Length: 155
Image 1 (cartoon, rainbow, N blue to C red):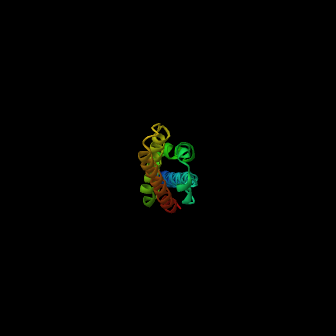
Image 2 (cartoon, rainbow, N blue to C red; image 1 turned 60 degrees about the vertical axis):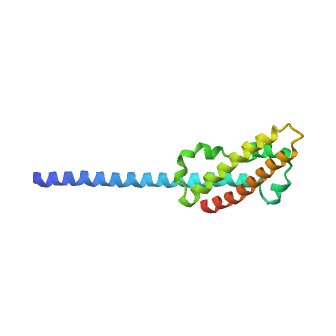
């Protein structure tokens, strides 16, 4: 065998092996990233679906007793998955990102206002309490609308 042919064959085999390994690595990384995006989308959508049960049907927003608003805000609107994956929100579909972030921002507003309402001790100021309760119910309505849009964008 000619040494030149041997060297060319050896280099050609090494190049083919490196190319094959590189293509396999790129494919593997693409698959992992695709799975990560899918898992994030499914997890966020599940969390939103659970939360929306508290504002569906719309009548529930208006029929929930004031005393229950703090309980609902703190215990019935999950956001742990969102918080744990906040650094990956950019992996969601572009149309969903703003609605997902707004939805969770509304949850935080709802929670904070419900805490204030829960600590309300002044029986004389019923008008201010009514205003705060109306604000909370408005936020609940926005949660319902924005959450629905976010779910549509995630599907």
